[in-house]
Length: 280
Image (cartoon, rainbow, N blue to C red):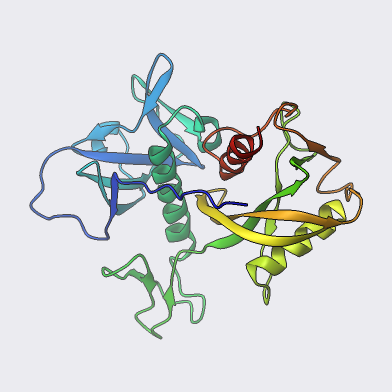
């Protein structure tokens, strides 16, 4: 198996503190209840650019600076859930914006939601209970009493394409919509390597063994705070036996007989598209 070339996003430059002399408009990723405020035109959505979030008729509960996006300052802000939607804008769950936002905008929005959720749940020190403060040097909250530092949580997960004689194993979970099929995935447990997790998840969910595990690429996944690490693996032995809980069906597919598969923005789709290019 030849390894794919990794993609690199170029438009976003992360930072912690804004330029105090900047006075123009900025990108504002405004959220509440896991939803993102976007400007809407027919068939298109984007992030609003504002000189101040107060123009939206509701001051943010919390605000974080994210850095520069396309050379423009970028902020994340959480507003009250009862804030009225401004004209020409609407709040949407981030999942529904998969194929609507540009891919790098989608991942920037994911970063905003994850950082705001972390900030909300780390207002007080988990060790001594004292109110925390933002670090100012990095995305972290610091306890002024005991010095405990709390960083944004990231939960690593693996997702794997299993290949056998030019076929790929795809699986369906009961919660998948539109009869979609995807790859085998799961969260890494304490004490595991990523490769250990690949082996365990595949064994638990479809009952087979794999070999020659190779890294494919990674993707931040904001549902709610994951890092998806993609792999390719070759079938070694065993018969497909779904667990009946995580999955209700799995089968081998060729590039010419694929079922409904995940949207383009997901790493699952990137792996499947790579498979199709290699084997068709």
